[in-house]
Amino acid sequence: MDDFDWEWQRLSAESDFKDLEGDAFETRFQSIAKSLWKDDFTPTIPMGRRGDLKCDGFRSSTGTVYQCYGPRYGQASVDEALKKIDEDFRGAKAHWGSQLGEWKFVVNLYRDKLPSELVRKIEQLAEELEVPAGAITRSDILDLIKSVSAEERIRLYGRAPRATDMVRITYANLGRALSLIRRAIATDPNEPVPLSADLATKVTFNALSSSTRHFLSIGQTGVAKVEEYLREQPDPEEPERMAQGFKARYTECAITGLEPDHIFREMVIFAGGGTGEAERDTAALAIVTRFFVTCQIFEIPVVSVTR
Image 1: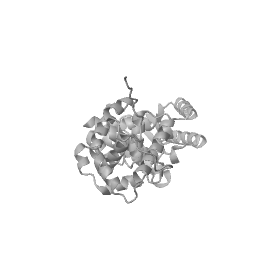
Image 2: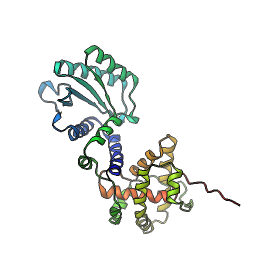
Image 3: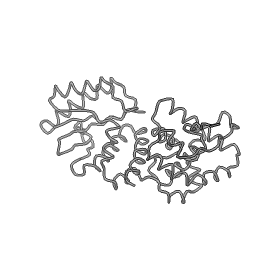
Image 4: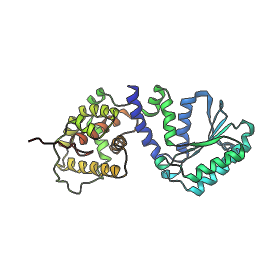
């Protein structure tokens, strides 16, 4: 199950980093680095007038000083970032001297893209200060998380839902998950729901991976519970409004050009998943699967008719 656990944990981590900024981002990176490098990594905190010596973490074996930058909403001010790189890199060189074997700028930016001016600035300072340097982005942090032991990853981000978890889905968790999307109200709540397409055919048609196929196959066992929950709601138009909410979110993701598996992860997050809490994640998976098999999200296979 480790491969499937990792795919689910990546979903949780991506959801996590979308909302992390400032000290929270720094703390999360420190916990990941400590889980991976153990005693070889020391998280640091500011103390006294000297502050943190321009270091958010130090790796002894490589002499690497890590400096974190988590701007609000992942939106960097290039001028602010350039200033921070200059001050922190020069400051680290001044404080650590010959102990500084490498400098890393750990950055949490939207869409995981680093402005070219920042890349150039790091390279210029690396040459000037004669210290190897580079940036660590969200995708690099995901690679670090993947390298952490399976037990530590479960501690950090939980595990993938199992088929046995679906048996234990409660109305309370379904309600908590569905409440997160009630704001996406239908523009036409009376729009009819299409007939269900074969799950395997639809997975193939949408070019979804084997991991996503696995999650949907598990989620399908919880669809009946979701249907039962929706039927018991006092508002008979609730299912259609939910369907419209999912359709709208799916369309937003598709328009931005996200890959099918990435869209699936976004839909699970939209349904309240990606939390690392098994009960909530299981409920979210069941809900997304329900709207997948009823053709509210993803593309419907074209069936050719032979005469």
